[in-house]
Amino acid sequence: MTVKYLSKVHATLRMPLHLDSITLFSDQKMKKNMLLLLFVVSLGFVSCEKNDDHKYADYLVARPLKISKAEFRADPDILPPAPIKESGKIYAYQDYIFVNDKYRGVHVVDNSDPTNPKKIAFIEIDGNVDISVKGDYLYADSITDLVVLDISNIDDIKMVNRLEDVLRDNIVWPAEADLFDWGEVDYENEIVIGWETVTERRLISEYEQRFSIDVMFAETANDASVGQGGSLARFKIVDDYLYAVDRNNINIFDITDLENPKDLEDVYAGFDIETIFNRGQHLFLGSMRGMYIYDISSPAKPEFVSEFQHGTACDPVVVDGDYAYVTLRGGNNCGATESGLFIVDISNISKPELKISYPMDGPYGLGIKDEKLFVCDGESGLKVYDKTDVENLEILNHFKDINTFDVIPMEENLLMVGEDVLYQYEYLDNDIELISTFQLD
Image: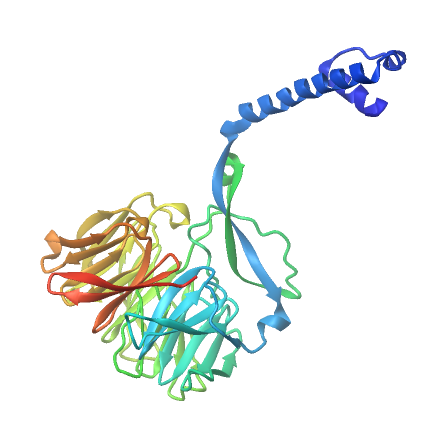
């Protein structure tokens, strides 16, 4: 111990210190005294921590994932099967399932035998969240770029085109995050491709004063050449057009020439657009503020028809018959505190009206197959309803011990992705039955 340090300790304890007396201590006595001093000081620190503990809480903090701009614009790598880091949305096309690994790319799963699916490749696409497929061409977002890959030979996937900066407001924020810690980003040479989230103890005042960030986050196939996504998708192919929603716009691409999409004029659609769903000549956009309906009779120029407003919440939507089914997830950056299933009467497309709502715990995606309604209620599991009478939904089954994210009701079976797990179910008369569970990690 130095004399300088001893002086600090004694000053802290407000005790007098005489340098001459230090030399009178024996080594043993000095050690005992120093241990006693350090113990007393440490008690003071612990006491302070306990007194301030009420000022802190555990929060989910998001930090940016960044790479160099040169690396970002390089061709995607086609890699052998790899563990998934964070499962995102799923997309089905022919005998294959494509599983998004948030901000990293797409895992390709051979599902020719639904009882025994197998990962066969990983397509590394920086910043990827959504995909759509038509005629063996896969369209994927890479932050602001649209990437086109030829998947006609699944064993030899190739990039054939990249349209740069066509998805101008395509920035996806992690809805579950409580705080954002940007750190340092060299915007001249780097680009943010996504987020990693960790739980940290932070000041409650920091959370209460945080900058409020809105969050962005449905697809059915019309023919065999087009794949099928879930209710959380932001890409939708209708005939010869690809519609991709970002935070504010409908980005429109003419894909008559599948290999060479034409970037058409965007249509401004509002704020906080999250999802897109198609039924006939209408697009249904889910946003944090409501559901917007657009007419695509003139496919290159969608026209606004009407909207249904609700409280601020994360919001995917699917449509069947005269009703739109909307899940609202409250909490975190989604805004609302309560969650639920809203059923909206759209028999008059120009004037949608709320029919009825049901409470939910924390719903994400949903899907419909005939009279069955499937709701992924987050940590509360997968809920299966008979929707014959929308005002009196009948629960058919509740798979409780799984964390659910999104579903795709296929013709023969139901696909559902949870926390790094792909589940497949077969339809029964009044129920569904699990046929396989596939770990993605």
